[in-house]
Image (cartoon, rainbow, N blue to C red; front, top):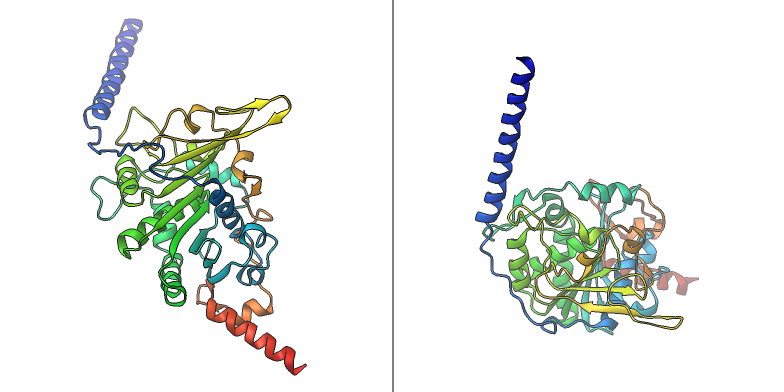
Length: 369
């Protein structure tokens, strides 16, 4: 009797679990978001390889921890293709471990905004956390659009946003109405995306271009659709087996519950190791592919296993990481302490006026010597 009762119980339990699964599946299929994605041809969002190799250097430089070297643009990563860059504002939010700068590139004839990626004791821990981030807040003013509060708040609810917007306004005052290019790597790429959208929607900025490197997904399909329509001049560069663009995970059978990339992805790989490669003898060619307008092109980064942290940390041969992995480490010498502005929470800002004043004081001191 006990065995028969146990078997009957197990049978009922299996039917109950099956019923739940069927309901979930029906819910996911029957309530798929009615969001129209704009599928445009591969040339609608122009990708410029040379520009990518320049912007990746800005995305690398913003990781530097020596603030004096950074706001005077004399750091080890402040040369090469970015030589001559003029900082308008350098922002360090110590409370939330964030860093960004705004400046003007005369070579690009543009305002460049760069956001630092995560600076943790272990990037492995940060990546593991990406697996569990939930879509948990509605994006303001966009029906059905959802994002993760951590990505959203890092830009919108810290000292970074007001500092960036003030710096963009200062750049307009000093240099006129230039194009705006926003970039960042990893978490910095997510912040760059929110910044580009903010500039278009809330400041009515024109000619905003966003290019990110190794960026995670930040919102759902509705958000991706709105974003692609509002900031069409956006490129997400992905590298080979970089794990971060695969996170948080995308579940195509649960469209209203899953994260979804916005377009347009450009992915690159090397002969013999990844996507659409070309090899001649011992020569190895880097091959770039401009993906479709869906944001989730199955022939691009989704066609390979996203399992490499190494591929996440180097793009176009440029390192995208802090000099050392530590928690919110910065280096401030006497100049930085004297000319930077610090609030009660320890957050720091260096403005163009601070830099000009420092140069004037230094030159005056030199003349007196």
